[in-house]
Length: 458
View 1 (cartoon, rainbow, N blue to C red):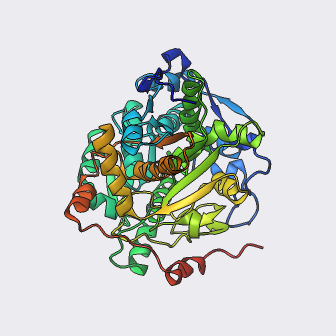
View 2 (spheres, rainbow, N blue to C red):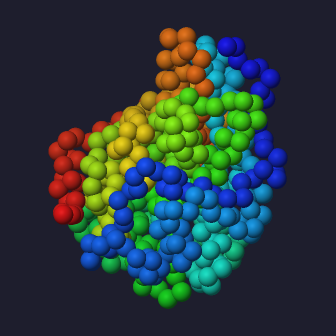
View 3 (cartoon, rainbow, N blue to C red):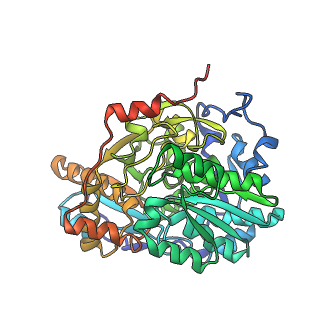
C-alpha cells in the first residue's frame, strides 16, 4: 500500500470539532488503578480529605472512575478556541530524510503563548478555582512549562499564583521566570527557606538542585496553611490526564478524516499528563479489542521510573505530606542529577499509566539525554521546528521505529506527541552544541537508597 500523498502537511479540525467532553480512560480499564490512600489512616482517600488541597470539582474528577465522558464547561471551550484545535502534522520531510516507508504524524501542542500542552489543564484548573471562589493558587514546576501555562491561565482569571520552580531549572531557564512574572505570578526556586518542608529538605540535602517532589511539598504546604488557597498540579493525577485527553481525541478525529489509524503511539513520560492524554482514545480501542496499537512511553535514563522503578505505594512529594499513590516510583526522595537538562524530572508515574504498564498495555524505554538532543537537533533541521527537550524523547523513539520499518519494509503508521517548543531551553541546546552535555544514569545502589524509603504498606 503506497503512501497517501493527498494528506496535507498540517491537518486542522474545524473549530466546531473541538471536543465538548473529556474522556475518562479509567471508566474503560479492565482493572482500576489501586486507590489513593490517606497516609494517616492508610484507607482509600475520601472527597472531603482532598478538598482542603484541591478545588472541589477537581477532587471529584480525581475520584471518578465510572463516568466515561465529562462535559467541558463552555467557559473552558471558549478559551480553548484561542489555540485549539491543535494541528496534527504529517512529517513528510522526516520520512524522506529517513528513507522509511513508515508514515509519521505528530500532534503539535506548542502553538500557544505558554508553548506546551500544559495549557489544556491549566485553564481548566484555574476555571474551577475561580468558579469556587478560591482566592489564590500554588503550584510547582519542573522545566517551567507548567508554571508558564498556569501563570497564563491565572492571569486570564485574575487569580494570584505562587510557583515553586525546581532550582536547577530555575537557574538553567531564566526566561521562563520572566514569562511567568510577565503573567503576574510569583516564582520561588525550590527547595527554599520560605517553607518548613523546604528548610527540612535543604538541611537533609545541602546544596541540592531540587526536584518536582521538593517543589510539590512546598506548594502543598503553602496551600494548606493559607486561607482561601488551593494547590493545583500539572501532571500525574487522574484529573490532569482527563483534561489532556483532548489531545488524543483531536488526534483520532483528524486521522479519521483521512482513514488513518496509528500502529504505534509514542509519548514522552515524566508524570504522564501528555502521554495519558495522547493515548487515551486509542487505548480504549485496544482495551476493547478493536485495535492492537503499540504504545511506548519514553523517559530519561537519568530519571527512569517505569523502566527501573518499583511498583509500590509512595508519596507524591519529597516532604511526605501528600496522599499515597500506587505507581512506578524511584522513591519520593530521589533527586535527579543537576546535569539532567531534558525535563521529565518526577520520581513517579501516573497511577493509571503505571497500572496499564504493569498490565502489559504500555511499553517503556529510557533514553540518555545526549541521544535525545541529537534527535532534537536533527528534527529541527529537517522539520523546521525547535522541539522541547521533553518532546524530543518521543522524537528519538519515533525515529528509531521508523528506521525499523526501513529495515523490515513495513509501512506502519506512527503517531507521537510533540508537547511543546524548545525556545526557553537554549542553555541546554548550547551545552549540547559545545559538547559538554553529559549522560547521567543512576546506579543500582543510588536507586536502592530511594527504594529503602518507600512506605511499608500491608
